[in-house]
Length: 243
Image (cartoon, rainbow, N blue to C red; front, side, top):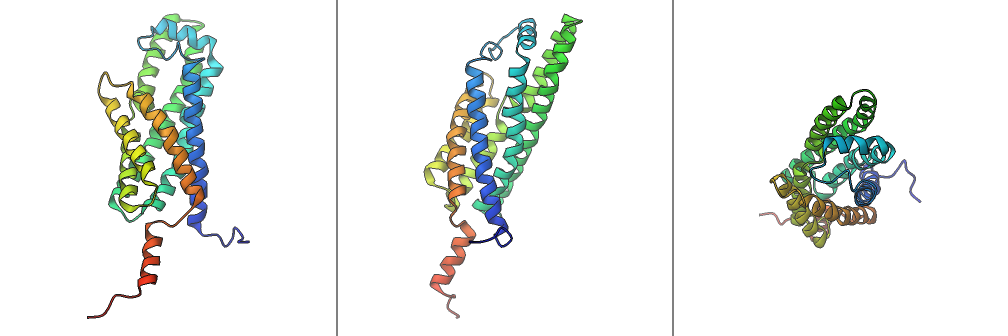
């Protein structure tokens, strides 16, 4: 049995990334379940600020849980997945490098949105006890900032998923159906920036649940990446003939 001391760094990164991808899928499932049940009223479009503040006061624990899991935990778990796919798909590829930058930016944006939202819930609830008008104004401001960073559109996340899926398709480093699914989810994320198409957020979320499950399975199962296959091919075919 190989000791952890002798295990290659890439193997550790692959395993960590695989488990982190499973966590990401779980955060989406948790978020959608809470969205469809306890928080259904709070997430309705056109919800008045006064109604939102009243709901927030009565459901602080649920909202804190929602933001912590779907934004903070998600943002933290996203980093090892981005790095594991960077290595798996091909770190030398320009497309992968660009995708990785988008993935890390997405993590930062989501974490920022989560920290703002988590603190904002308490701040609005405290303000509502003394000044209802101030609480409504504070909620409106925080909602706009939080949605702009990590909830109102999925452009950055869509760009990462689309680019890494295209790169993996070209390199053959992930299963082809998984790449097609990732590309479709990525496009759905990109079009959420268009007014009137925010409903595509749900398509993006559902697509990513399946995609992250597939990424987790692929990373945990292992297998050679592009560079490893190239070395194997060179070994099998021998050196190029000299002219």
